[in-house]
Image (cartoon, rainbow, N blue to C red; front, side):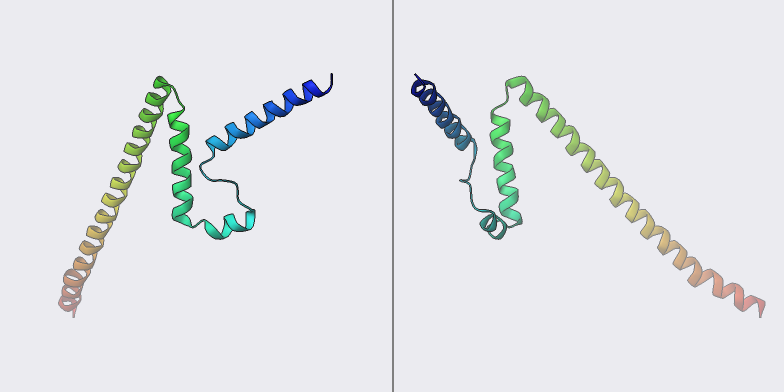
Length: 114
């Protein structure tokens, strides 16, 4: 009688392992190989594949919600980059005006005093 529940547990374990392996894009590797083989681009590619698998497993409404949040975050990041570029341009123009004022206005006032 004990062999039947053990067989059932073994079969379930094999099914779970097969299911887990189907979600994993790469077969498991030893730790030393993972550290040496994965460059920055390979890691990014691996994360993108995992995100794609996760996204495809979502239902329709969840996909719509994740897409909306992604677009919103993208717009906010783009807006922040534009503000940063505008600030850098403003600082460059201010520095130019201060330099021109120093170069042309201050030497003339010193020459008038002497």
